[in-house]
Length: 431
Ligand code: UDP
Image (cartoon, rainbow, N blue to C red; front, side, top):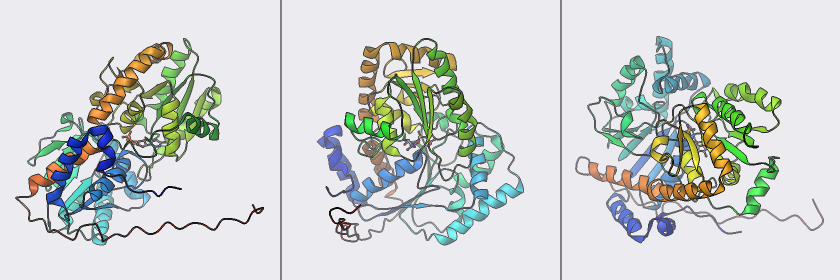
């Protein structure tokens, strides 16, 4: 078995070219030895954890000492922060004293447990946001907000803004999310790791094996949406669009979703959909923690949907586009920056529009191929992890004059990769 090693910029050369790789290495040089920490609220489930698992390793591979920590909390805490998340994306919230107490208390407790004296601190999303107030700063603090901030609940935003203004800069995904803030605002779109289990190349046999394992029939064309079970992802709308499309073209719908540890609403949304699958055996509803299945399903699908009503960015869109799929995406947020309507996929604003596009794509394999080819090229040019990495390097570099970065010893030599151990092989004839 081949030894696993973390991906580094060198691996991207065939995709981005030597010149871009060299530029990135050069930008990283002055930052070698600097200590960076990213903090968010979950190691698993949702796009932020997917992003950080690749980005932190890639940063570390350039000699930047990069940590990833999460804030811990009981269900009470995540219930409040999920309500805040919903209200930031256009819902409503009443920030009662109780909610404020729970939020601030647990953030403060996390601050006590985390010594933060890094050169750069990157705080992701609202869950750890107030940590900024709990430390004497030894370098710039940056708030990276991944949610759709185009219409935040005004009361909630007025409350959170008191923390946001204490950062040195804020990063949003797209310019539409800009707020009235005294601090600089930057716009970094997320990106995908083409070498992850979710995105790496799979043979046809591997794809078939994965689908067989979950008993997903492949006798009919497959349309799919892969998403956390979340109302903003509009799984009901997907089911309704599939039903309309099925009146014209026979097909099967596979909805695959996982539940993030910081999202308490997932199980309820999943259960609310179960009756659809009971009523129609062509609807396959799966909740599995299996990124290889995400990969296989996106590759096997004839049509991929991401029919979100709100979407900060929507990594699943870029992931499917990377696999050469024309994605039908909700005309909202970050999806609009990935899909160019009619060129590399379709943008839709209603169930009916989604159904029309499903039928068009199912009936026309050449259209699927042509759009899919353009979709993959869009991702290669604009949505690979190296682009995002370079934006962070530029940001860190821009702070250099302001802060005196302490050059701690480089990662090289500090972390030793252990020898691969092998499990004893069972004696011949034993189970
Ligand atoms: N994902 C997964 N399994 C699932 C559903 C989603 O691994 O069953 C992954 C998906 O491939 C993507 C991430 O979770 O990498 C979701 O990110 P996105 O930005 O689309 O949405 P978010 O959940 O952050 O709102």
